[in-house]
Image 1 (cartoon, rainbow, N blue to C red):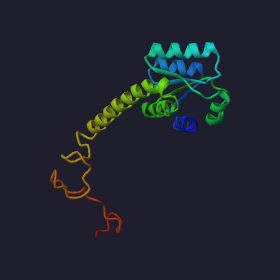
Image 2: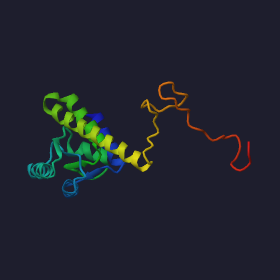
Image 3: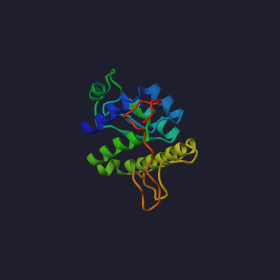
Image 4: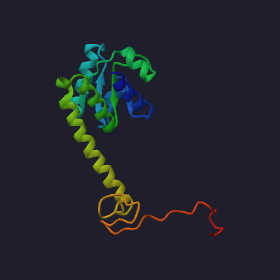
Length: 170
């Protein structure tokens, strides 16, 4: 459980975590959330609202094995019954840690989130390549060519001579 909680702490520090029922519902409605989690000791009504928000937004939902006190210790805020992770990679990380503990219960969730994270990474790389004008920084061989590459014939990228300051010459 410590690995799962540490990933939740990382999400909080990165600003990729929504905390509390209202914030989680808003993130689900806006389709920003990737995984909604409920604490093990959250009220039945809170769990029901979180599940409804997840199903309405088409978002993955799971009950976390940690209590509100454990979540509060990691997050540093109140006693949250419901949280939402906003990044697909972190959501997959949390789900995979949960599936390590209980594969029967969380394996399908982890697999679905792995596929979502892979799709989002592909889209992000394509968007970055479009911003660069089609230049992805990779050679024709598909590798980041750092030396003369026999496979694609590209030379290494030119580097700035750091021994002199710009404008003084070499």
